[in-house]
Length: 458
Figure 1 (cartoon, helix red, strand yellow):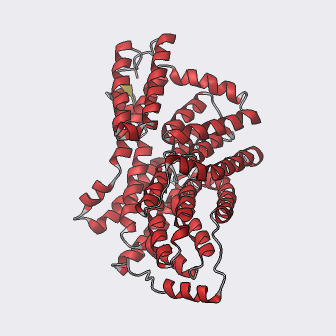
Figure 2: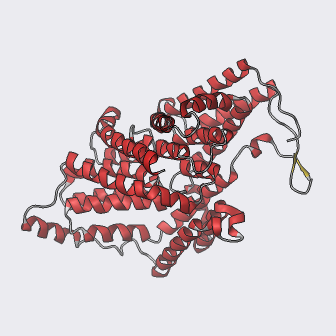
Figure 3: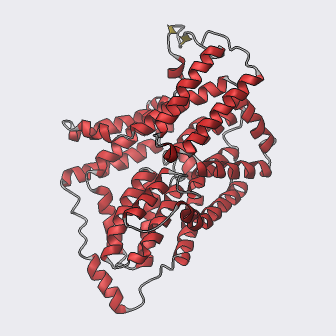
């Protein structure tokens, strides 16, 4: 931008700090306000821009692109991270189309049959599948697929009493699976892009923790919910007979499309994994890859694409766009610099174990009561301004804290909210406080493991 930045008074910074706090509180009270998060953040984005314009500290004016050409671009357009938007839209469309092939249901039913109806085996298979689906797809989609199948499976097996335990454990595991890859959750994308962490590096560093946390969660879940193997031969034979009635081919309406979707999913994962090292593709980025694969698979439904466009979570997309605008305004209002001083004090010189622990725990607590996306976006911006290197464990404190905090309360993440919705669908009682009472031991264990892992391994 051509215009120089205007000096911002302390009073103005405190005013915009109050606006940011009000937005975060409003997001925490989203259900009470009966308003979508996109509307809430959009309201604050409009108000922030108007106030920023009145105070005159935003850098309005033309931008100069490579080659010296001037381009008029509104400040709210430049504020949006369009690669993140492209990844979300492209991945959502790709998953929605490929799920129509019956691929994910096929995988789930095959695992159910492999368990022979044994509840403990089923818990381990479904738990592992939840983590894998959350990593490859997204948390919400994984919870819907696995949760729905869990309800059907346990009812057919006559194991309804275990349904609450299964669904709660699966909901908690979605946020563990969300840590596995760079694109498994939105905070990962935001922090990874800000720190310059590649897909492969992210996977290599996060996967050991995901494995240990998954095993620990399943062991604790089996113990606390008293999920055990079938004891007698008659019970085992009866369960196996019931499982045989499941047909994994029911959801496959076109065999060619099933195999096409399988190949496309494998290619998608491999391309995303190698984007940073593939010539040409690395210059276009992961957003291009996600959108390109979405377009390729949409060709199958070229006359019905509107159906898929309508299924995109536009509330999430508009929420993101508005959020990026708010964060950009806060940056120019020196709010992030103010918060950055607090974060800088907390983390010390960047090598302090105390600072790393404090950042991880505070991130967890904060993300348990509101959306973890604003948290990740704000902290990523602050760490960039403090010139924290990509190798620092502080980036991982934000990643682990933002994801795992979602397991403390039912509003901490969208997937735990979906888990509670499915629980209520089966007329099982679970209040807000009841969720916290049941989930807190798991969350504390997972956060403790993450703290130890970041300190020792990263």
